[in-house]
Image 1 (cartoon, rainbow, N blue to C red):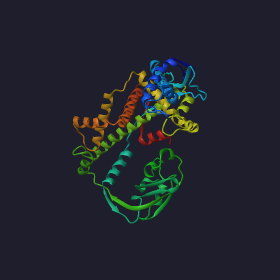
Image 2 (tube, rainbow, N blue to C red):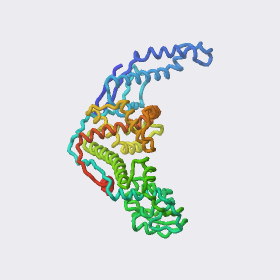
Image 3 (cartoon, rainbow, N blue to C red):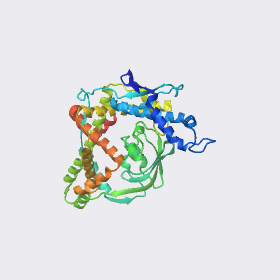
Image 4 (cartoon, one colour):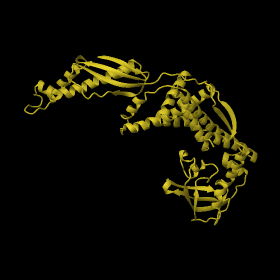
Length: 440
């Protein structure tokens, strides 16, 4: 068998395979002999059919099956031996006039190659690494929420500016239907006035535009997706199901112990310090995620390479349970191209930095994640045996392994980017960080 590659451009090639009779005749003859005792042809007893009749009835199908086996195996071995780094899988070229009886059979496969490129992690950029601080306004607001959350609920007949309302936001036309509890003070000043003086059973009709000072709160209270938040201007109904005032909880040792464990917080100053510490730890995770996304966008924009786009669009039509039309494949490629580009950049970044993800990395990451989760539920000192038992169960699930592996890779990349990209550090409040993140 003769196999060769024909280059079309840097990322597209064709593999051409010429198959001759000697490549498959032995296996075809073996299959015919195996078929002899089982062959059934009218006028002959089973197992007594002449060989030429067996070949006539079954030979063509057997020949095609064996040729396909030979070609598939040869193609797989050739890709391995040539160390081809492919995108997608080889696509056979369709030949409507293919002659299976020819002395020499030619098979052609289109392939898409991973592009060859380099990335400059130290390129000049305007990326910002945010240090998000919890200011007094945020901390005092959290203290008030704690007092309200653990205070005594007092049912009210009529709502006022300090009431908590339980009810359902709904708009059938816009697919909104969410039951929630919300303080009147959470609305914008203008919108909040519409919720004062109401009773259980009242329906308040409001516009989503200007309902909150920060439109992103529509995500929390109306369950509107982030992509639909900006500029949303539709009418929704809020049906009031309960109205409560509250008597704030006293800031005493009993409340502190209930929140943080015995003796860990002993005063209002300690409480504020703890709120600041916990909030800033959470903000740091959010800031790291933004940094990672900003670096991704920068690298995608500034790392130029070609993809075998037309090949991949054709390949997308062949994979999956539901075959795609050419138009559907075009849409799917446009949707996934950015992710594919970063996947390639990601692999290159790890390779250039000589970083490999090991199973020990995965175990350590999972162990730390489990310890954090246990601490959130009050289990601050689990034994190593307890944690490792949970780790083993988690990592026995392949879906979890895939998800956690992606998180390990992201963490490794974040470390690389912090070191190499040398982002500008900027200290901001949480409100300023939200404005920087969402352009508002």
